[in-house]
Length: 127
Image 1 (cartoon, rainbow, N blue to C red):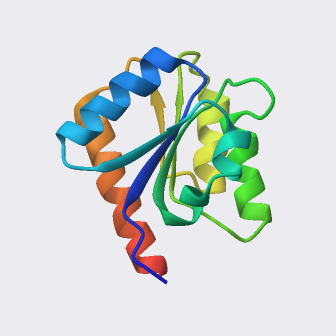
Image 2 (image 1 turned 180 degrees about the vertical axis):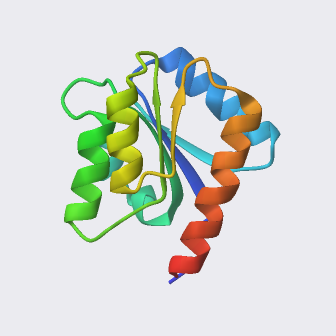
């Protein structure tokens, strides 16, 4: 199996996806973007994903449902959940379930980079 080094962004807001893709590429990361969890799950890039950044509030399948689906299938990916509608109870629950970070939009670049480093370190330790 090849070493996974890709960050996949799953968010139904195209402007957010594009902005985050540009930021992460400027920081030297390889990035793939998906407008829905379903498209991510059907992509061959899923298996190369080292870190998943997913919006919590999406139609069809939320970021939380996507995270839980991957865990249930035995395919955990270090995950950062993002939301424009912060909720402390949801944040605590998701961190307890094992997500790496729960961030609020607009994202703070420093917090995001710290979360990515932690996620990549955890992913490397798991392989």
